[in-house]
Amino acid sequence: MKTIQKPILSRLMILLIVLLNIGCDQISKEIVRTTIKSHDYIQVISDYFILTNIENTGAMLGFGQNFPPILKVLLLQVLPLLVLLVLLYRTLTKTNLNKWMVLAFAFVIGGGIGNLIDRIAYGSVTDFFQIRLGIIKTGIFNLADVAVTIGVLLILFLSLTGKKLSV
Image 1 (cartoon, one colour):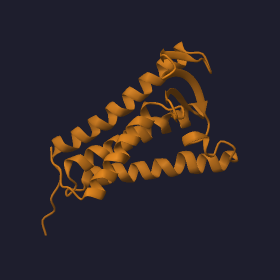
Image 2 (image 1 turned 45 degrees about the vertical axis):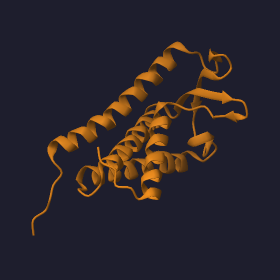
Image 3 (image 1 turned 90 degrees about the horizontal axis):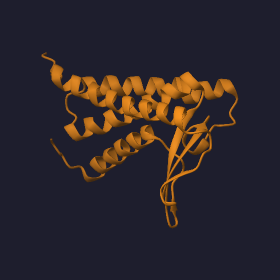
Image 4 (image 1 turned 30 degrees about the vertical axis):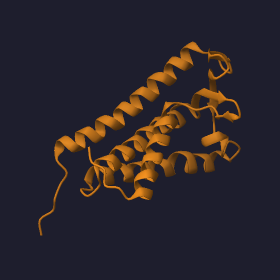
C-alpha cells in the first residue's frame, strides 16, 4: 500500500507560519517588557486602545493563577506542550486537510507555543493590549492570543460551514 506524504514545500510553509507567529509574539513581548513599566496605562487611541504591561501567571483571563505550583506546571506547561506537539505533527503529516484548515492549525500552534515559551521562561505570560469600545471591553491580551483566536475562529467557521475552501 502506497502512503501519500505532504510535499516538503507544504511542510516548510506550515513551519514558516508557525515560526512567524512565534517570532511576532516574542518580539512584541520583549519590546513591551523593556519599554513599558508594569501596569502602565498608555492610551494609544483615546480610551479605545490601551497598551499596558501585565504578567499573567495563569491561563486565559487569569484562570489557574492560584493553582498549586505542580498543578500549574502540569496544566499550563506539560499538557499544552504535549497537545501542541501532537497538533504540529498531525498538521505536518496529515494529507487530507484543506489549506485553510492547515493555516488555522498553524496559527493555533504558533500562538500556543508563543505563550508556552513565556510560561516556561518567565513563569508568566506578558499581556499588553486592551480594547474598549463602549460596552465591549476585552481582557488584556497579546499577539499569541490573537493568533490562537484567529485560528480557532477559522477552525469553527470551516467546521460549521463544511466548506472546502482552497487557497
